[in-house]
Length: 305
Image 1 (cartoon, rainbow, N blue to C red):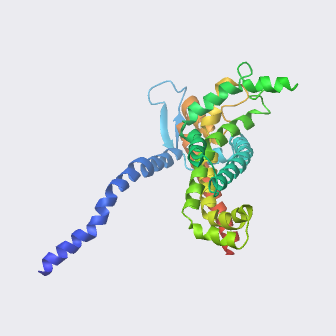
Image 2: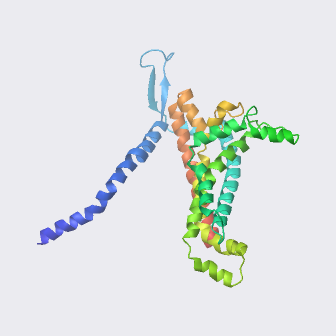
Image 3: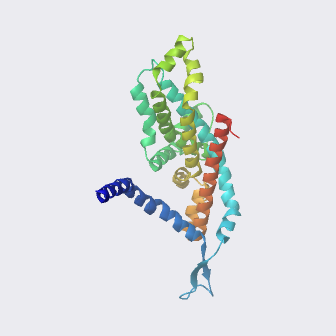
């Protein structure tokens, strides 16, 4: 009897691991293994002997931290970070601000066409990034752009893909595609809040604006933090918008963003070892920035040292 009970207990204890096994296998194959292989490549380099033409003249050897030192000291990489910093400041402020505004508006008591509005705001997020960027890219072209006609009617003229405006054009594409997702996260959080909270505030004489500022936004704080972290990570990894717009203008370099430099090093220059090291540096910076933001927000929200 004891043996049977022990066998049943062992099977019961193994059941959770059986359910977790598929997820663990997928995690190992598609996340842990690629990361490990990237780290391995980042510690290697190609050694060329002679003219590099004969058999065996190119060998893969251990490079230590040389690739990382080259990545950290690369001026092109840090120039890309500065561009992404300016781009990200615009995108995060406008995108999250609009998402919060739309979520609050849709959660009001007497909103009209709420379902249509939700779908209309969320729909751009469902458009693939490349398709959305090309769509906007053709709208930006001076020979095709309807915006150019509007500007000309008011006596103005602007190249929306020019050196001084292309970053705003890229930011517009990111905002257009990202507002819907963030709005849906915030709106879903608001819909989960008991309506009694708002009714109590109205009984106390609070207006809809006061309810939004002093009741809804504090409740939304965790969701706002979550969407901000996701948006920071996505901004650091910006690649689709500048890459898709690059054939339409000569103002976007092949190293405009850090990930574009990784792509160029790996698939244009052919130095996968340098590209691997640079990608690890980018991942480390994203990790530090994300956890740094969470730490700052946590300290301010909960008064922790």
